[in-house]
Every structure is written in structure tokens, then in C-alpha cells.
Length: 317
Image (tube, rainbow, N blue to C red; front, top):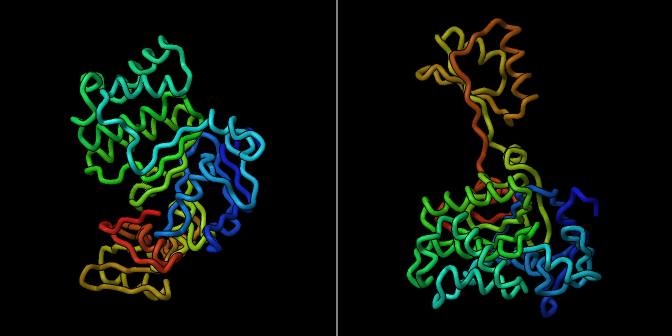
């Protein structure tokens, strides 16, 4: 695994009681990026995270994390990673500061370093005032911030976030997104599983869709959307004459005389848009405006996995 690769997975396999959960999964996550793993219930996302974080062993395959081989150097992997699970690891009976100091002690840090890291992370996550209060008094957003702060006590280079914003209100979710972006800007690599497709769309540099133990698609959000039929360009014209001329030139388009628009099938890629505009320029046709409409990740998810979803559905493991 080269130094620019934070996570490298080849041929990962895992079965439970004769049921195949992962069947030859390959992943390549560049350092300093956010990689999102999507999939329906039972697809194997959490199993991937549990294997990569050394909680369970794989049946087959090779795995490298932060330059360490998962089989020959699991301790090296553990020192390089942090894990924030779907369910909070915060001790509600302790204060925020005590939770952080306890985590430092578990990492074997000197007492003075535990205090320093706790103070630094409370400030970073806007929890200074709350740090002296029991975590039981925290809101959901504050608890998730503290949970992530605890993950950072050991200064990990790779972080596994397993549905980190589950149950948060929109404001708290966006605040968590900002924190994740800041971490990556500082050089941390994030592997994110999420139940919110919007979250993957906003955060991830690359997305892999896992279904029935296989990676069925991988790419940027834009690349995945372009794979799905239904993308089109809507052209708006100044008058009916321009609209009619464009409709004759751009075969397959659907004109709307009332709105003076023409919808033309198009995947929205730069090459496809350039070809369309070149044809209009060659015919000396002027457009008032142009908008590109592409399928969203919900459409991608349904098309690739056969499992419908909407903003209310929770896609977990």
C-alpha cells in the first residue's frame, strides 16, 4: 500500500453461520479524503467497519490501514485509527472533561497530557462551558460532538464514522458536517457510513454502494448520478421561433410552448453539454438560460440496489 492510500482493501470476504455477508469487496481510499459507504440494511457496511477497526477478523482478503497490515500488525492499525459508532460511547455519569480524560488514560497518556488534550478538544468542539457538567445533561448534538472528540484523543490518522449524525436535528447535523470537513482539511482520512444520502452527497469525495456483499458502483456523487437515466438539460428561449428551431435540431427533446422551454436528454457531463451547445451555436440559436437536471442519490440508490428510499427512510446496516 503506497503512502497516498489510507485504506486499501482487496478481496475482503466474511460469512456468519454460513451466510455470506461480504463477497470480495475491494476499496481504495486516498489519504486526506472522505469516502462514504452506502448500502441497504444487511448490505455489510458495519461489518466492513468492524473488520477494518480490528473488532472482528475477515475470512479472506488483504487489508491495509494507514500503512499497517491488518493481519500482521493489528496494533499498528489500532494506534492509527479512531472509531465513532452509531451508538454513543459517552459515559453519561461523567462530565465531558472526565470522559475525555478517561479516554486519554485508556490511551496510556501521561496525566498532564490527558488534561491538555481534554482542554484542547473541549475548546475545539465548543464544549468548554458544558465540560464541567454531567454528559447526561447534554443535548443530542452535544453528545455526538463529545463522542467524536473522544475519538480524537489519540490523534488518529484514519477515522471510521458509522452513522455519526443519526437522530440529530438538521442544525446539529450541519454542525457535525463542518467538524468532519475541518478534520479532513487537517489531513485526517474519514470512512463514513450514513443513513442519510444527502450527507454522503454533501461530504464524500467518493462513494461506494454496497449491496449483497458486493460493491455495485463507486465514484463521485456526480459520476454516480450520471449513470442513472433521467438526466436532462432544460433550455429556455426568448420566443417560439427559437424554440421550434432548437426542437428540430436537438432530436429527442420535449418542447413546451407555454414556458418556451425544451428538455433534452443529457447526462450533464462537460462533454455532453459542450456537444449540445456547439449544435446550437452552429445553428445560431440563442438561449435565455440553461439548467442541468440530474438524478439525485436516492435515484442512484434505488437503481443500483433495488431498494427504494426517501428522506424519511433510515438506511442503516
